[in-house]
Length: 281
Image (cartoon, rainbow, N blue to C red; front, side, top):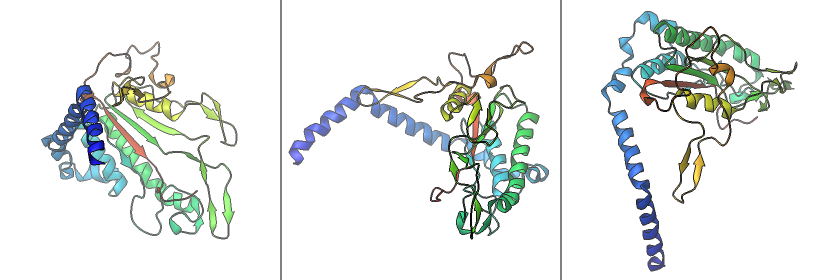
């Protein structure tokens, strides 16, 4: 068996070597090590460099300090920083966003738990947005706040409580900065928030917008070891309302319509309100 497999493995390695796949893997490892070992990255984690007033403005909880760290990482040149909003603190009064009945094993009405956690979210996000704009980073930094799906328009109820289950047909995303056109609501749903009724967009459209900000062509394809193209997005186009220029503005959002960008000149901060992956809906 070993003698039969060895030639096949050797041919596989030869094919990969001729295509440069191993060289690419080694280059990625080198880049990852250089990123982790970069002095600016270490400095970004030194939160004590920030004033107590600013740290208090963000909030002395995991969401607030994570948002502040995200801004510091963006300033240090990190291209993509993910902040996960699970719970801002530990305790029985805190739940994540999987607001079905008995979320995290806690009975009661989901709205009661939302009233506890929403002020923490408001504090952290408003501080981050204001800080980004105050520092003149609003063209460099794109902030995207989104979960993986919406929640049922109709409430579920039983003796253990009231909740909302999974609903992928319609949900929203908050976008700030990136040199894009702000101060608008794009699209709408029907009166019961069940389905999009105007300008529906998909997660792929949002991803295409995010890729464009980073200077990545959304139609780009990678070539796998068999020589087949694998598109980074099977579908999706940048959201027109966010990137289109107006008659009053001659500035075009950076990252769109340019052949090549310095990847480290732009930062993306996706903030996810993802549920606990072990939850049910």
